Image (tube, each protein chain N blue to C red):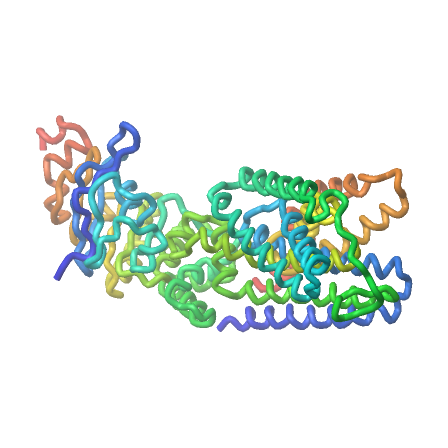
Length: 327
Length: 243
């Protein structure tokens, strides 16, 4: 009974392990620092998008304010480090926990909103967060925080000579976000989230506490995104409100999932692998004068995808799979 | 033994509209009870009150010896109230088996057990062959059956069926009738709202007729259909006199 299902789950796991293994070997062949940089960002956005996908893809609560949690992760880590000497590893966890608590606190009023109203609320809240940090003197206000970097240290998670440690951390984070999604997909929570997305009233009649399901999804999603924010802050060694909490982060978390396939296991990774290198390349070709051209590219891409393949790029794979299943 | 379900003096007002006024009904264990009445009689509202979609304006609802008036729908499901929706509400992006697993998770926290339970229910409802199909690809009659399957997976003591036999072809309706009997034989009490008299009357043990939000008549199906009050509610006073 259900052998197909178990086989598919195991196959996903094996494919992921192989891909992760190949990615781990990539730096052996790719020595160019610029390309390594693109790889790091791609992995980071894959992880972020995968985390965003938990709340917005599986549970159907579309958030365009996840930059808030990203920024909270970054700021918690750096404030704890620069003001109190707390190591970034602990700061990362603290940032995740704080982001999860804030996500639930915000969810309490906002999960009563439906559809577009919820989306608008998330945008507004993230913008308010940005404004607060821009005016918060103790946290460096608009000037931001420069992280004192003194040589390579795993303890302080900072590296000057090589980017490889950042690469491996980003890869680990991406694997973690993927694995959490994989694990949740075949759990009570995963089923509840999909039910809530498809029809909250029916879900409620089947014993699903809709509100709690949304809260759970928000907490997991925010936690992982905040860990990503902490990583990004360490990677840049400098943060200011716009560079860790700007609206573009909310977009860059949502777009890979939308492009690859929203609410699917592989969508965010696939989307990020296409979108992020493309963004970085257009940026570097066009140079400083063309700021915003990358946004035009995404816009066009999203329109094309939603017209031609509304289920995202992964549907190209699953279509052939579905045919095989009916045979 | 107390009744499984009891509504005591239930009122529901929507603004100036009174959808249910002073409705007191009871459903005994193991019964199939039909809730009938013309359009706008307040059947669906009463269903929603029993299922916990909204609290009544006044009155109380008792289930299995407990006052459940203040409990939300999910909590009532956990206590053993299962329901279907008149307008089907399948989880469209999920497969048939996944739809049913959502229901099975109420009593089975381990995924493997929930999955086994869901397969069992699909066998029982005759949907096993469609397990891996997306719910959005089902034909209407199958969607109705999926509603029943999903509710059964929650292992209810009371199953509320909201017009599951309406709008089906005669063959499909007969399959539906057989399924309802099978459900009762499995020890589940059934309260069903139905329009199609000739299908529902031979099926139910007892019928409750609602009209204008009130209980009009209650009794054996054969007596209920002959009752002049029922005939006049459905067809107008002229027919009642001539009957």
